[in-house]
Amino acid sequence: MALFALLKILIFLFNSVIFFGGLGLLGIGLCLKVDGGSFTDFLGATVSPFTQLVVIRYLCIIIGSILLFLGILGCWGAIRENKSLLLLFFVIILIIFLVKMASAMIILVFSSIANVLFVHIDSWAVGTLRESYDKEEDITKIWNTTMKELHCCGFHNYTDFSGSRYQNQSGGYYPVFCCKENLPCQESGVAYDKKGCLDKLKESLEKNGKLIGGVGLGILVFEVAAMVVSMVLFFKIDDISYD
Image (tube, rainbow, N blue to C red; front, side):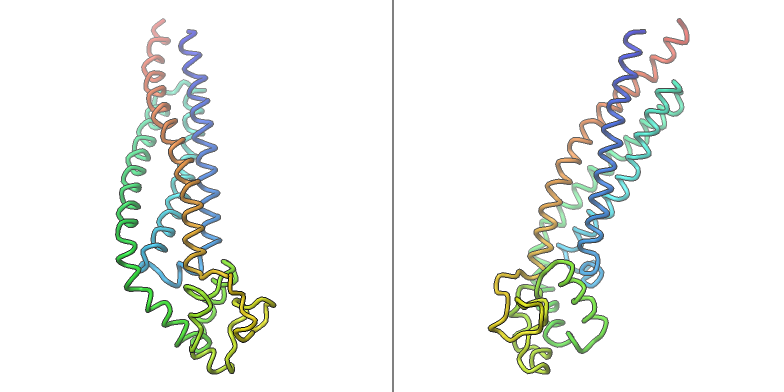
């Protein structure tokens, strides 16, 4: 009985960690959605660094939501001493474990080809700023939203607008997002230290990637432990019932 009680305490502990870990992943996923939404919608699945952000974002939201459910399911199964719930908990958490392994491999593959794909989209992204900004309403709106959200200027920096259609039409001015005073300015008023949207998005991806990796690794350890304890508890329920 003492061992059985200890197992129940452990399953509560592990599932509490899984629950709060899922809550953390869900929060990260929702934050990523707010931070990079407009830019990733614009650049879509053709740009590897942004594709990684989209993939990680939705994986966090989906896996975080499932982990929340699993945390509740595991605790409920232990309270009720219900073998069916414990078995369901084990099967689902095993599936999540395997999906995480597959997801990690996918992200690694994306990372390995990022530089190759970036060469092909660099000229295209800069081209939209030079030729389509302030000409095509949808593209202008998306770039404005992106530069406002990420506090950035251009794809690389303010020079993406140098010699652009916008600059020529405006009499040599740069967009407000590139300027020190938050007003359209000529080159003398440019905020030279303001980074391009590509660098800002990469910074966000790297920063959140470390956080996601740490949370994910911690949850992974507790998932394995929870699977082991749930199976031991599963078989111990029979022993207790026989006693």
